[in-house]
Image 1 (cartoon, each protein chain N blue to C red):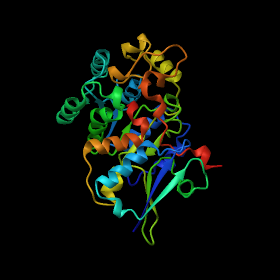
Image 2: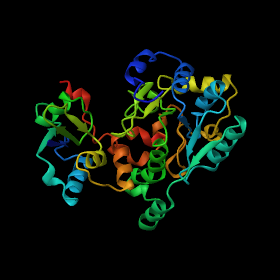
Image 3: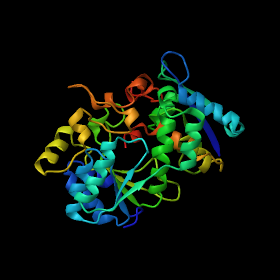
Image 4: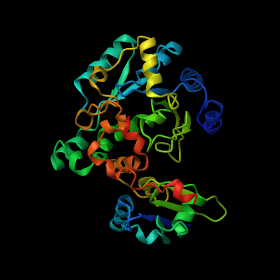
Amino acid sequence: MKITFVKKIKVDGNPCRKCAEVQSRLEKEGYMNRIDRTVIADERDMNSEGMQLAKQYSVNLAPFFLVENEGKEAIIYTVYFKFINEVLNGQTSEEEAAKDILDANPDLDFL
Amino acid sequence: MSTSEFNPEQQAIEYSDSSPVAIIKLALENFDNIAISFSGAEDVVLIDMATRINPDVNVFSLDTGRLHAETYRFIEQVREHYNLKIDVLSPETESVQNLVREKGLYSFYKDGHKECCGIRKVIPLRRKLTTLDAWITGQRKDQSPDTRSTVPVIERDAAFSTSEKQLIKFNPLANWSSADVWEYIRSNDVPFNALHQQGFISIGCEPCTRAVLPNQHERAGRWWWEEATQKECGLHEGNLKK
């Protein structure tokens, strides 16, 4: 299995808030060594590898994880807790999971 | 029908121009284990339409504990008007107590609304949705140009489906405008939340909802203090196509 973590650099040169938060959680929770590659989606450079991956897999949210298994279709995760639960078999609290769901689905808070 | 036999992508294409009633009919005919999510606002039209097809349709509401008194009264009015059992879902006591103990009653004005919404809405919603095969929402494209402009009438629920279980989401009002909804409410004598008469368009929790001025978008009435950060994590399609 090969895991690629794609994080975004905004037009102003700063990392996006959620990307920084997810990286911090990966490090704090000890998962960073499970990530094979970290790739930048630089909004100032449409040819940056992360932007190209986003285009290739029709992803419109950052950060995201690209999970590749030989002989299988690649899977994209845009929700952190789902990636942790389903790929790394880790656990997240309900509160963290709920916040991840809202970050990835901003329309839900209108319910 | 089980969710694995239902093809939401195909049905979304087939029903993309259908009326909300036709979409609700499709939903209720295909799924027994389905419920309407009722926010206590103008999505009451879903209940009006659905009860004409199935008078015992399942309905649930998320009681965050911070709704307006008018919204609680309205939920009760709807329960009586349609003779329905509405499943009113409460947040987990411990999670709310921990949040309030740590950050106070108005943490969302400083830290953003997502932590509070997560505890008071998303966790109870997620628990409810694990018991269902499909749900019906009042989401419309015109509610938020930023986050809802592409809402399909039928979709595989990306937020709450799991690797073990797929959840189907019906958005019968996706293509309706606010004006369409209000035309239906007036034409069919549908009861509505009294807050609408006070200038409220989008109605949520009391501290996070305000009335808007004429011609202001309804989004301006929700979480108005944190507008600037809303789109921060989007990988904008327009850029990607360049």
